[in-house]
Length: 480
Length: 123
Image (tube, rainbow over the protein chains, first blue to last red):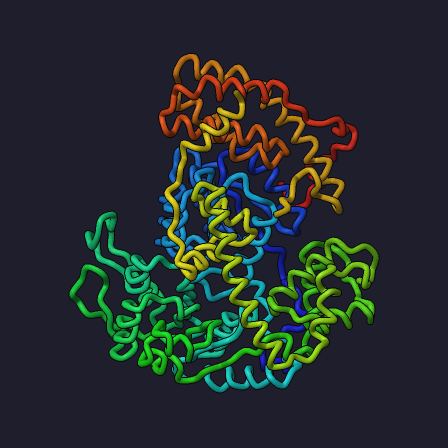
């Protein structure tokens, strides 16, 4: 089993450390307390000199960087760190939560973007996610996330395919619902390949603005367009001799798909603004949570590209179809969150475990992980009992226990479409209430900014112009 | 969406809770001192200074439980950025009043404040 990548019961070798780069000591101070409470080591930098020294010497697990860092511009610092090969995720903090700044930060390579004061739940999620994901330019993790428990036949087959395909250079398409661990499988393939010493570059296509996706993927020459004041290597070049992982491939702009196809056919590409053909040696792994054949049928994914990408297809089954793994996964997450939060490892009563095993887990392993972490923190006593479980898990039991008929399946499809409508309306409402600030809207919706951008793109929502005067005027009016 | 707050955090770490109370007390003192600073900056039309103070308050106050001051500071910073100087006297007055009246609560217990060195990972 160990050869299949199981890390059951593993615990992190060290407590992850976070570097806060902000010249406001009051902000540093309170963030430091919260991050310490969540189980992290925390360091602070008050100026650029301290930041650079600590960032390179200590190699923190995550850098929280203020956009307005004293007299220095956080975006410029971010750009510098990325260009110098920063190998740790960087999260921007800013009081100016505007879409252009957020997009620019993400384009430059920031892991995420939080408005100040950060919502503590969101900050915690982002930091956890950053630590688990490492960074797009980092293939080495001090605390690698668990891939699979491997107790089920379905996952054993997945891992067998990983072992078989890893030593080859075959292109792999990974499919599966959100939260099943597609990126982890991609990383596992990379780590078991001869390319493991080189970069694993992960790119979420849904988070890339169409207009900039080409230059981010293939790079651009100085002067290629307004604002291109220096030559920029694209992710294809960064991944040379390594692995390029394109997640949510179905979200890629159709025009860019043609260029990706040419790259796959010829191994050659042009940086934006250059006629020089360049070639790199990259292994491509792609992933999607959507039905690839339907994407092709609907004209959203080029058929010729699809067949290029899908030399080997690995489908990760949803957690509800491999319930025998829930118990071992709960054990693993209990051990990990107890270590992370410096708490005693709790047990689970048989009744509570039965409910956990019966729940449908629509968010798959990621949802299970978050639930177990909350239980570790919030439940009292040494054992998690029925009383500790969230209500929706108990409430889900009767629904999932019922066998689904074709009629109920059709009803589910209708419900899914209705959910799309509701979700789109909720996003529009949040954007309206936040005056078009995506960062604020994401906080209101309780989702990450990258997720919000993806949904904005999916639902083809036109971003309203930010009405920045409105807020000042509204406060003034309320005071009168 | 329920927002977590510093006020309700640190349930399992009384040392951190006490450290937070200590820092909130000190922060409250600094906020009160800013009352005259920001009004003077406005009177002398030092808009950059008004912007700097407001920007910082907007980013930090909420984490100490002073969300109302943070909102008012954000409005001031935005008005300076947009050069809506005519709105500033009212906005700064409102902010200054909140700063002057800042209340750190009655649960601050100086006796419970631990030695900072006991805060693992925070030094």
